[in-house]
Structures are given as structure tokens and as C-alpha cells.
Amino acid sequence: MSTNQFDKKSEAWSALFSEPMSELVKRYTASVFFDKRLWQADITGSLAHAEMLAAQGIIGAADLASIQQGMAQITTEIEAGNFEWKLDLEDVHLNIEARLTQLVGDAGKRLHTGRSRNDQVATDVRLWLRSEIDLIVPLLGELQGALVDVAEKNVEVILPGFTHLQVAQPVSFAHHLLAYVEMFSRDAERMVDVRRRTNRLPLGSAALAGTTYPLDRERVARSLGMVNERGEPQVCQNSLDGVSDRDFAIEFTAAASLCMVHISRFSEELILWMSQNFGFVKIADRFTTGSSIMPQKKNPDVPELARGKTGRVVGHLMGLITLMKGQPLAYNKDNQEDKEPLFDTVDTLKDTLRIFVEMVGGQPNPATGAKEGGITVNAVAMEEAAKKGYATATDLADYLVKKGLPFRDAHETVAHAVKAAVTHNCDLSELPLAVLQGFNASIEKDVYECLSLRGSLNARNTLGGTAPAQVRAQIARHRARLA
Image 1 (tube, one colour):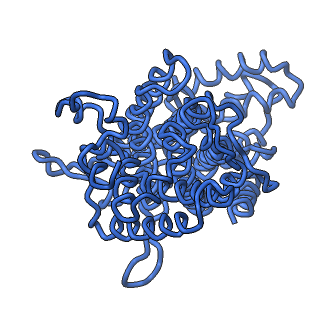
Image 2 (spheres, rainbow, N blue to C red):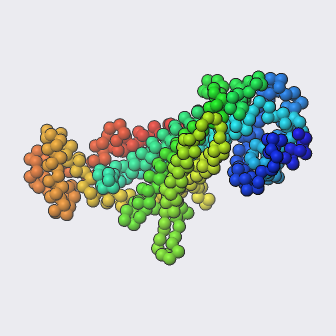
Image 3 (cartoon, one colour):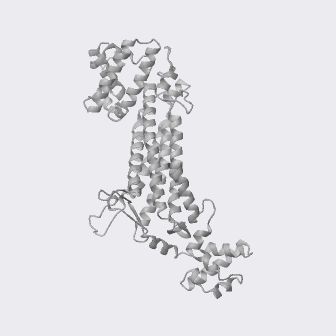
């Protein structure tokens, strides 16, 4: 097929067919307008493949030089916005191959030797996703760092800890924020783990059965950085699996879904804390919106939208799982539908992480250069709320246990004390000593230390506890880990 012929007959398989594809089918089956974002990965993979073909003597050195020159020009055209993406050429791969053949002639046609679009697209998606994970992991680190910064300023701030959204026990606000640091730390670990399995080479699997050409697949893997921590090439070991596997996309979307769930939980708390009924925090105006009818409103649109976008990402996970569940080996056209949910998942997660990094960590003030946070903490409101739900009741039970009372008996005794406090409309710490001793004679004056919010906090001085000393130790650990 001549160069001109390639332009006129868009389908790479057209010699077999007696009639052209209908325009409706072209539009229905084309993917170029969403998969063109894979262009860098496609060119990178093609250059590694071409270099290997030349090294193996499958194509000549002149062909390799022409391919490299043509790909450099295509890169320049795409980056400058001058590349013409053609619907007739269906996808990113055929668009680039057609332009390469137009530029360098037969050398461009030889590039496809020993490969299929099946292993080509599987390689491109893996290369693209690997680079996106390499952007997401640092963003997760930045978000953790921003949370640690806010935590460090609020170690001594007392927040009511909740179970069932009922006041349970007092905690350090910093301790509460560090719970999210732990979540995002696990998210980063998962992303690194997904990257390891994504970073394996399908190229050389060809259409499904491998190829008759003497390819050096391990050479290509090394060229593309598809190696393990020891520098050993990582190659898909079964050609059928190599072209049809999308586990890595599902696994990434699962990890992204869990990360978005963590963001959604944090968003829900910000939304509650910002409401007038709580009044624990204020979010900077640049992350809120007003009402078209109620001038007093400041709506937490960023957390609300992040909470909503979580459903979008989880939906993509369900879509990908459903996409794969009924497919026989090997490649099927169904797999074209893997890209849009994967692309949107990446975009949504990256955008959400970036805005949360700024919302939590703030941004520099142009006038002073100082970093101004996006979240303002109302420590007084938090502490007042902690006093409302008898948050130190468990501390009184622990006090009685240390006096020798079995815990279940202590629990019952404190329940009667709480009932008395409710009757008198006061906190446990405000009950007179004589009243407390009426519930158990072993109670002494030192009980008021354990009934104070600060005393309750300080008493939980075990690893992972909310005592300020423990919280500061955790902040130091996170700082060292994130450095």
C-alpha cells in the first residue's frame, strides 16, 4: 500500500472489505477524541519497539533513524497544536502511524512489525497510568503534610470525639486530623503497589499468540523503565493475558475510589463543622459560594462536590468490573470502554487532591509571603461542645476501676451519676463531691482531675492515644516519613 493509499483507505484492514464503514459506525467505534491523550505514551512505546527491531536486525538502521526523525516531528506538531487528528483513522495509534508513514514512507509501515494494536494499546495505557500515578503519590504526600501542619498548631485544642455522631470522649483536634493522615498514607502505599503491577510490558504479545519475529521483549521493558526495584525487566509472561488484562486499571480505580472515600469522609466532617449548629471551623471564602436568594449563606461547595465526585469514581470502578466480567480471552472491542472511566478517574482524583492541598494547607499571601490556611479553627466552640455530652464519663469509670471496682460495676455506677447530672442540668465535673461519693464512697477529691477535659486527654498517654505527648510524637513521625 502506497503512502497515498494509506491516506485514502483509513482502515488498516481495508483490503479485505468490499464496502466502506458507515459514518455512524465510524463515530460509534472511534476513540481518537478521548484516547489522543495517550500520544506521548504511544510515541515512547513505538520508539522503544523500533530501537529493539533495529537491534534485532528486523529493520535497518536507516529505517530506525527515519522513524526517530518522524516521531520527533510528530511530537513537535502535537505539542504546538498543529497535528490533525482524523476521525477516519479511529484512534491515537493509527493517527500517529498514518502521519509517520506520510512523513517517512515505508519506514513508518515497518514500525508495526511484530506488534498489534492489541499489545500496543495495552502498553500505552500502562505507560500513561504509570506517569499519572507518579503525579498522584506526591499529591497525597502534600495533602498529608498540609494536615500535619494544621495538626501541629492544634495539639492542645479539644474536640468532642463522636461515635454514632453522639459526643463520646474528648480528643485532641490534631489527633482527629492525624487519623486522615493515616488514611491518605495507606492510599499512597496502595498507589505505589498498583504502580508496581502496572509497570509490566505487554508489548510483544502481538494480537494474542505472540509473534514469529525474534523480539527482545526484555530489552524493550528496560528501555521503557518497566523494571523492578532490582532493575530486572518486568514482562507479561502470557500473550493472551498480556493483551486482555485490565486488572491494573481496575486496581487503580479501586485504590482511587478508596482515596475518594477518605476525602468524602473528611468533606462530610468539614461540612458539619462549618455549619452554624457546630461552628467548629471556617473555610476560606475562595472555597465557598453564596446563595442566589439567601445573602447570609456561605456554602461549602468544594467539600460537597468532592463528596459527590466520590460516587462518580466509585461508579467508574463498578463500570470497569462489569466491563471485564463477561469477556472471553483474548482482546475484545469492549476494552475500548476502559479508557474514559480510567481517564476521568485520574482527572477527578488529581483535581480533588490539588484543591484539598490548597484548602487545608493554604497559599502564600502575596503581601507578606506567609502561608495562610484555608481552614480557621474555632477552639472555643469545640471545647464547649465537648462539655455537652458527658464526654468524661468513661474516665470516671476508669477512676473507679483503679479504686478496685470491676469495670461493669463501675459502668453502672457512672450511669447513675450521669443521670443525676442530667437531672441537675450540669456536667459530671460540676457535681459536688458529696453527691459523687453517694454513688461510691471511694471517690475522692482527685476525681475532678480525671473529670476535666484536659485531664481526660492527658490520661490517654499510650501509643496511638490522644494525649498531646502522643500526638506530638506522631507528628514527628509523620514529618520524618514525609521528608
